[in-house]
Image (cartoon, rainbow, N blue to C red):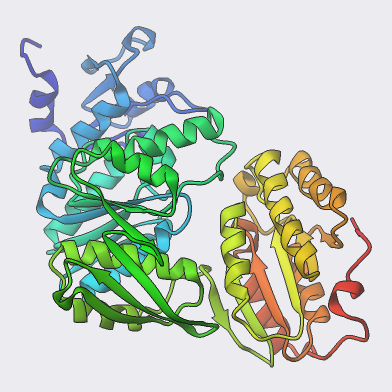
Length: 494
């Protein structure tokens, strides 16, 4: 093919771009991306059989003879991002798109921003852990940050349906794999960076390096908003091409929140910033916890940068309904239930600090071990729980949620052992239940009127609240046990 831009020529004929051979349709360009466990080059023949127009690869020498053109590129992942963006005519350029990265808080901040945009009268989009929203349409998602081809397709759908403003979560894996390399952001947000994905290829050092690559995605016109309380976020700000803006709760920053009240029903606070008329904005949030004030402050800063009126922001925050399994509070049958995806030490600490605002007789905690994430993060989570238990003992029920999770989230023997060993070495009382249903039964049996039940953990606890409500609706008595809840569940029963 005699052309200086063979891919450009192919794009004029292509009907789509994908890196998944199962999604190839006639006329698609198939980009053979090498993953951590699978090599897309091994699926090139299947892609051609499904009708691929051409194969793009950074290892063409390893491909079998194919009946379509093979285009060699230095980096298949980068090529995938660029090809998908070109095929869809660079959709992010037509959007006010905020990228949100960080260990904790990404989902809440992105959802807050989308809510603010909608309250301001904009057609809004959202991409993240909970799926994808294109205006009024919603789609399930399997990755926090979709692969580059899928991502560009969603952005194109937003542009074509009239969406003007959107928020997008940007994960460490998404950064490492270049999924957002061809996305143009109007601004970025860094919530915090702490040890979480200790199973991340290369460990925490590689995870941190991936996060620190986020500023490179922002152009000189796209400011980075950072949580000034996090030194790693401040280091990220120093690498940003545009001047960074800082946010802090109770400390000097470009945007400062001063908390007027924190209760189990929410918070009241004042935002001070030079960008505000009169310098201040009074706000309230129907979500408990200081960490949610931090999230609201970051979202407020981004909204102000996008020209949203301060009073519109205040109205949006006051009506924000929260995010599923992000410190979701309910009060059925005389109990208080807090459901949260606390899945690393920092998020566990944030939950327990927020629980301090709740009046309660006793605390019962059901925690799901993290499957498929390795022993290290599980030992760290258990150590965090143990620190809080030592301050004020609570009933602790640990579960692997066997049968309630898929293969990727199934708890391995070394993960369970690491979690329990970390509790054992600190003398923390707990019981272990293999199934989620058994753990929820124990939590209901241990709780009495006026008690607080916290359902904590990642995928293993996703169905915990539904099981608990069904248990209550089926007539499980909520009554004071004969022994204090912590004592009733002691014994290291594994």
